[in-house]
Image (cartoon, rainbow, N blue to C red; front, side, top):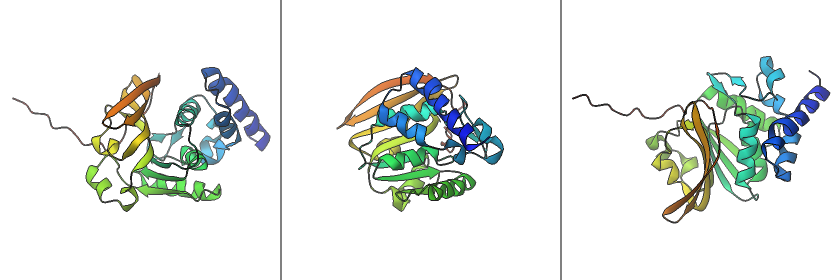
Length: 225
């Protein structure tokens, strides 16, 4: 595919996959339409960069769909000053968009090959306010020992499905902060937005979808009597 082909595919993606699903925020649409998504996918699947669905990645992973990415960006409504935690870097595509609209991004990736590839993508696109940490963010002890994760975050994005949000992740959110996550079990996973207000949380559901499960979650012991 040529550069023009990708530009045409990107516009079609915005019009047919995103705008028609009621993501209408102008800044989000402009950002997504300006982002060369094909630069963030493996060479052999570049032709799938703008498809409606999940692009396969190394390490048995997959990218979020364009609609999932755009919905996240739209509902976070970043102002340029936020400190953002992303869990599940993938190729760094969402990381890049978050960095372009916030003050700082710390992104956690459990697979070093993906983390290294994403670092290259961020560098190629001039992103200097995001760092990628190779860590299992579902491990509370590992998070407690990670220097980059000792300060609270204004925004937290969990980019894989889990049945419940770990307490140590919620504890890192500032008061008034936003947490967006995919919660549930396939075939029903809900993208939710939670806002922290003191000791209480406000939660809204955005839509239902499908997504790979979060890796690195601790196994729950089962007792047999």
